[in-house]
Length: 519
Image (tube, rainbow, N blue to C red; front, side, top):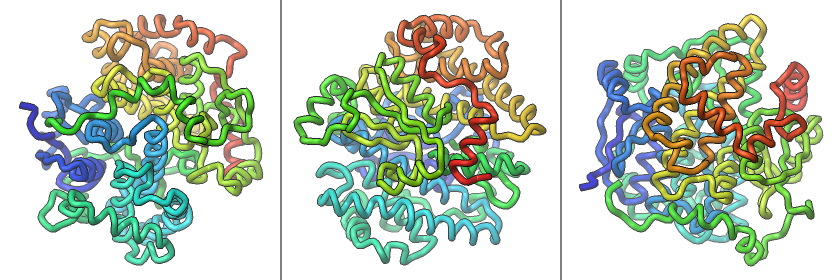
């Protein structure tokens, strides 16, 4: 018997709440095991259930899944809440990514002081009404359907309703200027499964209170009170601009989703397994649907970003690994960025942006997922994709630490570098060393090259630039690095003169600070 999914987390919202929402929307019953003591958490660690030492954890279809986004992807695909094809999935991913950014501002709200809460409340409302809700208001009006994507209920609708209700808890009339969203809220709230979840007595969690905050602190022994400095504050501001909203600053503290470590039964036929097979024909489908072609007549993807690594570098890596040539347009001035926003090219006013197959895609994760699906780098079925998602999300956590380093002040760089080394050698690389040894194949998932392999090689090389001997205790990863570096498309990308960007230097940092007016 497959049994009900079992959710392991605190008795509160946090990163698990979106998973509860999506399961409930799909009409899937689930069980919960609440973490109330440090000993319960350590038992999960010792059992090996927490791949990257993080919750939430969901047991589903014989898998112990971690990484919130990976879990949500799997549930959405399994229960046909992920669009009918690759293009619809791309739209869902972009909308979900934007909604996640907004919810990121809310996630840490309970952990703030009373004074900081009022400031954060105002920020949440400001971001919702000036950046995010206007996008969805326009999408609903232009699309002319009851739902955000296509003409069927999807994960994007569930996630948006969840965000709307959370913002309304901060300001009850926040939708007063958004008639389309008001109607959307009524429609989605009336869907039977959603209506049931919104009723008293459901597994929906209440607004986090002091008891919830104390439980999380006690169980995780959180190291949340980290002294901030100017450069770190500037970096976090940059992350908000460049779609890196996993952290934010408030009154001398850095609050980090990574730092906190937060980071199925039989049902309907999954749409997820067919997505990889659709990649080869995506251009024909897009053309048949009458979507306007891009202005660059070469048909190559066009990448718009700063002339440096940042959040665009994994996209360059993945396109190169797939053997896809691409063009780049570098943003060098604040005026260029403002023009992109004014012209409506940046859906949520953020970079990176990639023009591909008639779409102007934003949200790094959405772009990478589309490329991986289109070029058959996303596994052969839903379970392989789930593994790829988990591995990619873990690698992304480590990569974010590496991306932060150039923005650290000189006196903090040694400490931050030591933290990267500690996390790489104690948390992340041991996982992949074990996976490669137990799997017994050249690749992380199945017996073929995937997005996960590309991203792991990228982070290995990025960490080695700072800590050359970091793989000395990992023979499987040493062999993996050698094999992956010799894949023809990767080997070409690693040669001088390719589109791969060099390590960020002071000029790159200064350019970013200038473009985003952070000097």
